[in-house]
Length: 217
Image 1: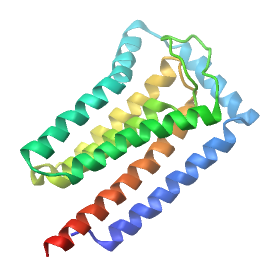
Image 2 (image 1 turned 120 degrees about the vertical axis):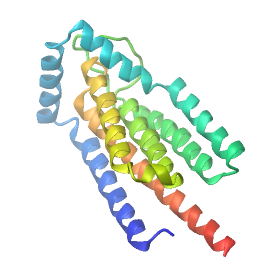
Image 3 (image 1 turned 90 degrees about the vertical axis):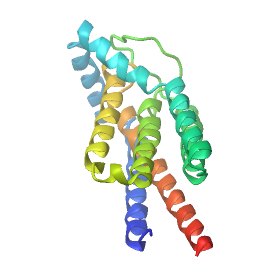
């Protein structure tokens, strides 16, 4: 049973994330913010080390499109075929494909050029908001939420699961700055936009579960 209080809390958090994204969308071009972005990129480029480059390249690659699709297909098969559930794979699919479309739309709308400070890897496309940050927080955040909601044995460890998920998402975001392909505000804006979509998908999941429960009773 999904409580009205949890729905209200999710709606409030959604509004907060949306407000943060709008804020970053307005301020990233301001001179003081641009100075901070440039300062951060130059200082981070000073601590480039081969080992750290390998580590953060790993985190960047682990959150790339092929792995996201592979993970989605894996759990979709388990839920659809193994457990005869449709809500979970449906919502996870809406989350993944929706957030990828949104990110591309935002990039084409804002058309921010990528930074040019000691870039470690080559990549094309626009910079704001960071796709890795935006998609990771939405997709992996929702996946961890669905796993905890669906499997009782995981609920006792939900704090650890959410912490490790948040740590992974944070490292993915930082890897984009460390590798020189995004400004910090790209990543922060991506987190805010992705967090908004994550919470909207959580609301969709809660609504579908509530609807399904009412039909059963």
